[in-house]
Amino acid sequence: MFKKLKAWLENKVPTKKSATTVAEQYASDYYRELIQSQTHLIVQLEAKLAAYEAQKSNSVLADIQQLFVTQTNKGIRKYGETVRAENLTPVEWCQHALEEHADSMVYLMALKKSLEESEANGLETS
Image (tube, rainbow, N blue to C red; front, side, top):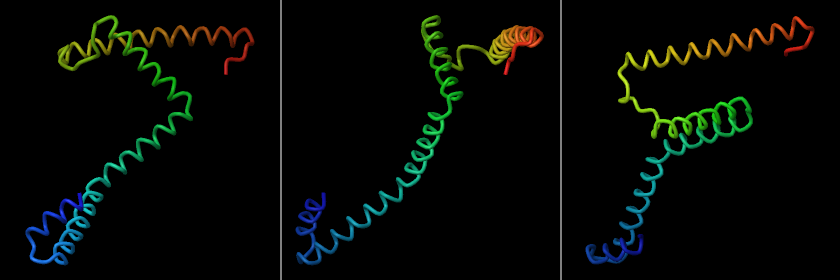
C-alpha cells in the first residue's frame, strides 16, 4: 500500500522528497487511526477470552452451557427452529414461562423429598 501511495504522490507532488514525506505521514496517520479505532474491539475480545477461560475452569458453568446447547437442539428438532420473540405474544410468553417454572418446582420438590428421605435414613446428602 505504501509503495502505491508513494508512486501516486510522486505524480502529484513536485519533488520525490516531498512525495516520500507526505506518503510516510499519511501512512503513519492512517495506521495510528486504524489502531485507535480498533482498540475497543481488542478490549472486548480480551474480556470475552477472560470469561471463556473462567467458564472453562468452572464445571457448573460448563454444565449449564451444555444444557443450553442440548435444549436448543431439542427445540430445533421439535419445532424446526430456535426460540424467536415474534412467535408468541407477551401474554403467551408469560404463560409459557409460568408453566416451565411450575415444572421446575415439581422437579425440585421431588428432589427435596428424596433428599429428606435419605437424611431420615441416616444417609449423607451433601
